[in-house]
Every structure is written in C-alpha cells, then in structure tokens.
Length: 448
Image (cartoon, rainbow, N blue to C red; front, side, top):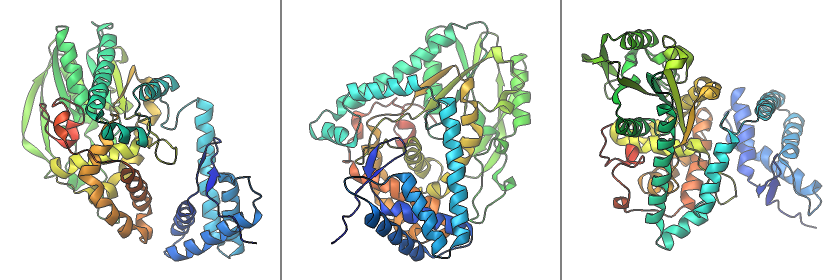
C-alpha cells in the first residue's frame, strides 16, 4: 500500500503550515558544514530517509510536528554513521531551545523585546485596512485600491512619529538629545528628519549629528575569509570621539564633525563645525544609538530614546508572518545599489554581519526605549519586487551547493519565494516624495 505524502507539519506554537523537505536538507547540511562537510547531495539523501520514516510511521490524519522531525533527523544521522554531524545538530537544537525559553520567560516577541501591545496595534491596523496577507495586498493591486493603501500606510507612519514628538515635548527642558535607533534599513534617517520637522513646529531649533560620519577608515577593519569587512559592529565607530563631541556640545563648545565617504571607505579631509545652543536639541540617527557606550558621556535624563523597526504583520502564502529582517534586507539591497555602490549580491552576502550586530548590540537594549515606531509599509514589497526579483533566481542557484554560503542560500530562497508570491507594482508616482520608502528607492525631497 503506497504511503501518503506529507504535506503539512505542526509548528511548536501549534500552527499548521506546509511541509517543506528543503528545510530538513538545509538543517542537515548546515550541521555537516560545521564539521567540514561539503556534500549537499548527501544531505538530500539523508533528508529523503527522514521523510520516508515519517511517511511510514505516521497514522493519518495525525500530522508530524517539528520536534518529531528533529528527533528523526538525530536518529538518522547517528544510524547512518554521521556522529559528528549529529552532535552538531543536537547542539544547535539545544541552543535554540534555550533561546526560545529565554524569550518566553521575558514575555518577548520573536524580535526580542518589542511589547506585545505594539505588535497587536500593528496587526489590528493591517486587519482593518485589508492588507494582512500576500493575497490581500495582491487584491488591492488588482481592484485598483493600491494607491489608497499607500496613502493609508503613509498616514499611519506619520501619526506614529507625531506621537513620539508629543512625548518629547512633555519632557521639554530636560531632553537635550533625541536618539533615533533601530536595525539596518528600518527607516532611522527619514524618522530623524520627520521628528525634526515636528519639533520645529513647536519652536525648537534642531541640529542633526550623523554618527555614520564617525566610522573608522574601512582599511582598519579586519576581513573574513571572503574578503568582506565587518563595519556593522559599534566598535567600527570612533566611540571615544563621539562621546567627547557629545560632552562638548552639551557644554556649549564647538566641535569639528568628520565626514565619511562610503564609496571610498574613508573619512574625508574636510570636517564640519557644529555647536549646540541652549535652545537646540541634538538628533542622533544611528544603528547603535541604544548601545550604552555610544552616549555614556550624556546623563540619562538628557536623552530621549526612540526605536524604529519594520513590524511587518503580513502573512505569506503558507500562513506565516513575513520576517521583518527580510523586508529590511530588500530595502538595503535597493538603497545600496544606487547610493553606496554595492550590488544586491554583495548586500546579501554581507547580511550575516548585519544580523549578528543587531542581535548583539540592539536587542539587549530595547527595554531602555521611550517610544517604538513601526517603520513597515504595507505597500512596499510589490515595489521591491520590481527592483530586485530578477536577481534572486541566480542567488538561489549559485549559493545552493556552496557550503560556505548556506546562510545566504537559505535567506535568498526564502526571499525569492516571498517576492514571487507578490504582484509587481510599477508606478512609483503614487508614492509621496517625502515617504519613508524614498530613503531606499530614491526620488525623495529629503537629502540622505
């Protein structure tokens, strides 16, 4: 009697999603790579054995669980004589279990410490505006209401910024520095500009201090085995100079702010004088704004910490929420291609540094923020499809068999499948010139 193919699987949270054998292949191959393996075909053979075992032992209508699949992977690896790979897989599984336990104890979300209330507000908005899934967004393109979605999402973001400014005004007299922090390509720069616009309406003079100008010259950073630089760590910035300049500014002194050229990877010879008057507020736009040593010279009562993240609440075709980091990756791919002379492939290969730095230097400090802004835009993914989808089939093909690029392969495959499910939006004229997305696709009234 033929076995019934497995088409669904139960996740740890009880959600039923489509079964994907490729995830088993990736899990086995990643463990094998850690102990020197390079044969993806062997991982595929072992995955076939795991699937066969599941099909033979399951009793319909019962569905296999993720934990059950992982148990069988361990068993198959050991019985097939791959003890070292099995050990690596077990260690990986244990580490992720401990991580999940820590998140559950903290009452945190999958992003770290974003309050559930904020996530709930974002999801409720998506439900109310009929844009909570790929199908719903595609429908808005097909029925002609996509321009209205652009308008609605723009208004939502602007209202969130205005709410943050109300809190700042409530602490007038004490706040001398507003820190705009968040992970890469979350919208920090646009949010900094808009925060400044709102504060100006209340009579404040604003001075923006771009901490990207404080990078050390790229040549001073170590390279990895691929020749790639790691400038995502806060230590890539001249923290000593930043703190000295912040202290001097609050004391009413004039500083000489450096200029950094991303295309050359070096500071320029010219610098810009800056002085903070008593009636001015300093705005800091930085990936690492929440990192303690970044502003240790400034008393806490003089800071307002604002955090922005792409809290995307859109479900893919499998019923799972699209990852926030994938949205930001696409933003950075588009921006880097025209603004920083990086092609999309370089951005994708560098992204593991970005994620590592976010986990180490942003997530631990989320509990210190005064306000969280949702920087996701419900309409943006169909726009990025126009710019980037053509590259992803090549990424998936090129990285699939490369044992040293499995992180890039898994990410590329996931983003490829996600973009493929969206319809493409071509007409960018419906997007306001001051919209956050212009920070990435270009055409903004703001200078970045």
